[in-house]
Length: 125
Image 1 (cartoon, rainbow, N blue to C red):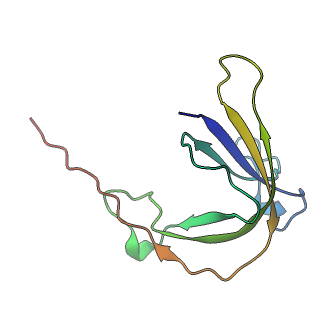
Image 2: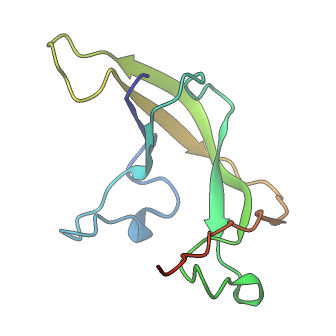
Image 3: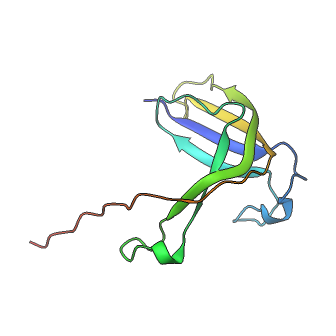
């Protein structure tokens, strides 16, 4: 099973929303929109793909999973090009690093409710 790190970043540090994108541990501004750790064989993102935006709507919140997103929609960031890197060293942590450069391209997109997560009840013995 491949181990891939996929980084989505803006084409420019000054892309819309720049003032809200900061690294949590330092507060420094960043062009990174998202990081995905992928262990599947599905294809890498391609030009034209969009990031998905997740949110939690209070009325749909699950008491058993209070931090879980309840809704999803297609986001305003569209992949403009992808660079793929494969490590040349043995035993590298990832088989592939993909950098997906994104441009801000707002769209009208409806929120859709995510399926409820089935949390099994723990049985006491």
